[in-house]
Length: 195
Image (tube, rainbow, N blue to C red):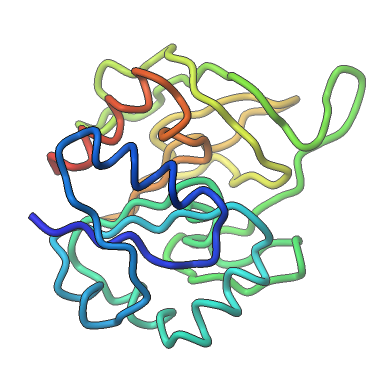
């Protein structure tokens, strides 16, 4: 099985690659369109700003390639956000796989932005990807979030509920960092690799 990890300019690449290797895989870190198209599974990681990540994907000719993938695709953190239509961050136009706009997380008493730390998730829609993960804790670092919609498998809360795990057809995503989320994160990645 081949796993392509897309070079989207994120800062969490080495930890994602190490997490996948611990699960017995040999992921390929790449921006090569042919490698990405022919991979059995694709992971779109990301840490950073939406506009910069989209600029990098566009400059590498990857936006339409990613939109047209038919194999399982998993977005991590910013990688998940890139699956949506747009973001107020940089007023960025994103990949548009999921029909919604990201929102900036609310500030307020006891609500810091970015949301940084361990949060539990709640499953709201059954899916093999999230089986046995309800109530488990994952590590989040983000200032923007996806609203809850038909695409939402699991939610978490920062002042209000937001999408923690999403799925639309063959596209999946997690707002948190499974590669930094201990056993629960390893479980989620393993489930994705088995899709």
